[in-house]
Length: 188
Image (cartoon, rainbow, N blue to C red):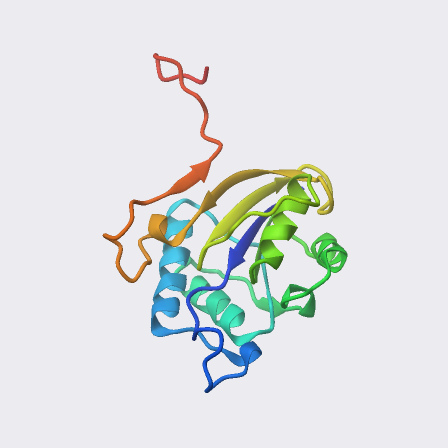
């Protein structure tokens, strides 16, 4: 069964900017740097994607494109899907994932939709995970993607990848299911 990487788009032109309709807001230069750094961090940890599925909105698509620049070759083609746009239906995302080949699939989209989808995958209609810009939630599916199919393996935010405007402002954060080690360094 696949491992799903839910990735929120990086920093974009702020909501309400009079120069852009909400759906047309592009990434800022900071957002492009964040996305490339995220790709480098994931690649350094040996993470590769068999498939990358993105919201068609410019800020999400550009995040996916920049993310792949930071990763090792070969990189998969990015496919856009309306189900990953704001307000997309979770069951459509489930069907999309079931049809997608590969054991490592990245979904690039938006909050709060990705956060609610993460909650659904790990077992609750009421749960939501807050994803930073750009944040990643890694969920391992034990069954085909859908309701209560998997578990959250880890969650990272932009400070952990070193991609903030002011990286000294906050300490790095990583939330993960780290193995508990006994005094001898072995799993307890």
